[in-house]
Image (cartoon, rainbow, N blue to C red; front, side, top):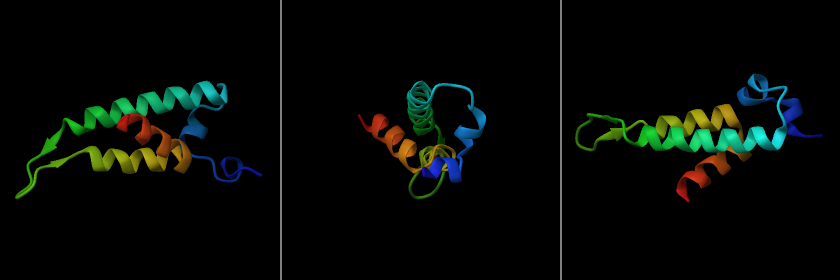
Length: 78
């Protein structure tokens, strides 16, 4: 049995009626774009500036789950 059925993620609950593969590709592209945008936002923090990228990686991991979250960050790195 799949873990997505036992423990649905936030993305599973929000997009129930859509095709699984199309939904995953669109979420990965959207997540990687959000990760790119969050890297541009800086918070003044001494001595090293902090970006919102760390926060966005955590949000993607919580909302997408481990597999799709890893694929999203991998797509960002490409």
